[in-house]
Every structure is written in C-alpha cells, then in structure tokens.
Image 1 (cartoon, one colour):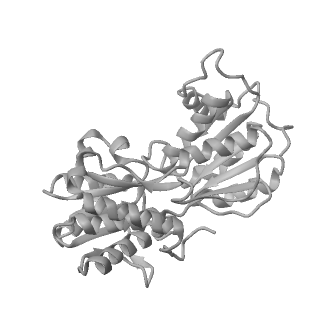
Image 2 (tube, one colour):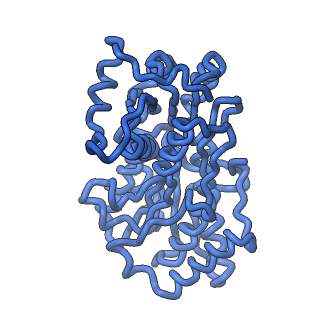
Length: 355
C-alpha cells in the first residue's frame, strides 16, 4: 500500500485528546536503539475496553511491541459502548495514519465501510473475517488448542464433570467450545471414561451464554450453577465475565478454571492465579506486531492470518501452580495429541473454523 497518508499528523483534533493521553503510556523506543519513523498506527477496541484481559489487551500489547521495535507511532481509541464503534473508526482514519487495527466482530461493519472509503490505508481486524483489498483478517483456529484443553480438563477432573460457557453465541466464542467438548470426547474414547461436558452441545451449536462480555456477576452465577452440578473444571469464553467464574472457583474447593486468549495466570488478579489450570492462548500480540511491520514496510497483503498450533498462533499456557494436578502420563498424551493435530492425524473441526 502507498505511504501517502502515513505521516503522523502535526495537530491532533480535540476529540482525540484521550487517545493521545492513553497512547502516551506506551514505553518509547530508547534513544539510539531504533530509527524514528513517520509511520503511525491506530487501534480501536471493541466495547469491552482496553484492559479486558482478552483480545483488546493482547492486541494493544502487539501494537506497542511494534512501536518499540520499529519506532512507529502507536495510538489507541477505547470504545466503552456500541455507540463509540463507528465514530472511533472514523476518528482513526482522520488521524492520517497508515495502519488501522480494529478488534472484534462488533467493529466489522465500520471497518468494512472505512476500508472501502480509504483504499490507501491498511486495515486489519482481529477475530473477524472481512473481504477487501486493504483488509487483513487476524483469526485463530482456537478449536485446536481448546481440544487439548478439553482433554486436559477431562484428565484432571475428579468429579467426571467439566463445563464451558460463552459470552455470546458467536463464531470466535463457539470455536473454543467446539474444540473443548471434542477434547473431552477424545479423552473418553481413549480412556473408556464418561466425563460429562456441561454448557455446550456441538451438534445443535447451542449452549450456555451470559449475553455479554463485561458483567462478572453473570459469570459468577453461571459458574456456581455448574459447580452445583458437580463441575470442577470450567472454561469461560466471555472476556471480563470470566473473572466471575474465577471468583466462583475461589469459593469452591478443588475447582479450577481454564482461561482464554492470554495467560490468565499472568493477567488475572493475583487472588485468582492459583485457580488457573491453563489457558487457551491466541498469540494476538505477535501477529499484530508482525502485520504492523508489514504495513510500515509496504509488505502488507489482505491474505488472512490464521493462527494454528503449527504456526504457534494458538497453544496452551503452562500449568503454573497447578502443575501437580497434571500427571506426567497425561502431559505426554497432550504432547502426542498436539503432534497429531499438526501432522493431520487428528482433524479438529468446527463450523466456526476460519478459512
């Protein structure tokens, strides 16, 4: 793409003052270690906000990484409600920056509209697929890693009951849930067990949802209901709502959670760390940093980035303080399953899988 609209603007509109203040929190490149660049990039969050312990936060880390490594300007516009979405994408375009990153399916309509109106600007969107000559989808086949998480959950459960729930019935959410219940089923097949996975029916593509990604009270209530049914490992796929799941687990002996998107052991409050069995990781930060780099060097393409186990785009986090709950034999089985998925011997399928 051309660099004709990529100069950092000398004057920032008053409406973008909060953006500039927030962007100023990023650590600038050390003098003498990086070459300063005219190129600038703007990220627009979805309505979950920047510190969502999920993909907004991870995406911003990636853009800050690009800022540190390349000396580019990185800014962020935080959406706190749906009414902010389209205006924030417009404001991002108005900065004159050459790369605009939007995060989440909610931003798809505004991203598609602005990309069409601004063909000389590079756009990328996380967790959504949009077609356009200047739009790069950043998506992840999280079902592959969630399959491993489901197998792990079944293997460590002492009650024989595990559970999952989502924030909304949307492909980026149900993709995790599909993989999770298939992993549980695989464990049952291998070990001739009957571990039950509550909260999701893959065949009907329906299950338990809280209806949003911010209300931790809903996560608390939903998880308590699962615990009352005997579940002792719970996978919330619901952004900040998942903190409510962690709170419920903290109040119940022997209950663990599996986090999503980033390593919950590192991003959740300290009180919840010992409850995190593992996390289903999306390596959003490195993907964003690499695509920003491509845009700044005119190497940008609209070919989707699809994170997989093979390319390191998805994976499982370490077991951290709950490592003692994972027998060596089970860990070895997971290593073998990972190799089989990468090699094609096991195909993890989902109607929500990115293409």
